[in-house]
Image (cartoon, rainbow, N blue to C red):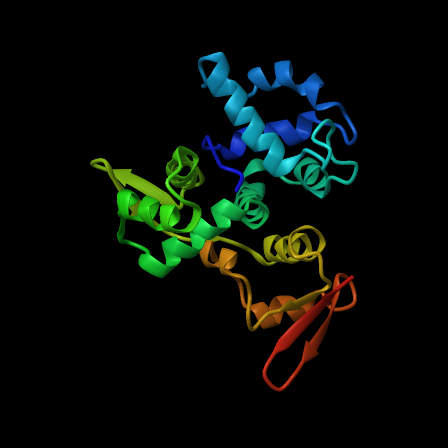
Length: 232
């Protein structure tokens, strides 16, 4: 298990993606990142946030360079922070196994408008990964991240699952492409059985979106018990 040691803000992700270049050495980004995450104090705190952000969004498999193919950078250059915020959350959950597992438990245990029992949630993750500090830190860091993204609110020290993030047709189209290209690495997406990461989002009418982009981004197939997108 790789932990999620520090919470992330959407702005940090946005400005980092604008800064980086495909194939660039990760070591060249350490100093510039400090001017992005100006709220952070202490070298250790900055290092851990930087590590989480780079690992989740930009680092290639050998850990030394930025990915050669960086779809999120192209999107970030095209759209503003408000548009990209739900897309960043979607990508983070889809690409980070421990965060995906935390998300599954959140929706198994709580509904929107309900308080999240942080201790109980941590214990559920300990049952899976074992009694390790990184497990408990990952839960706390992800809940704080959800606060930064506007999904959870803090009220009198309570953490309330506040609301889903609204997603328009274009944002959903991008999510489907990211799901296909970078998360499940398969061209076939079932609209009938979407992954649980979509539960964080208020989605548009899926059939309308599926029809809208036929021939441009995917084929749309109706089957007896399923509706499938075949992404180009």
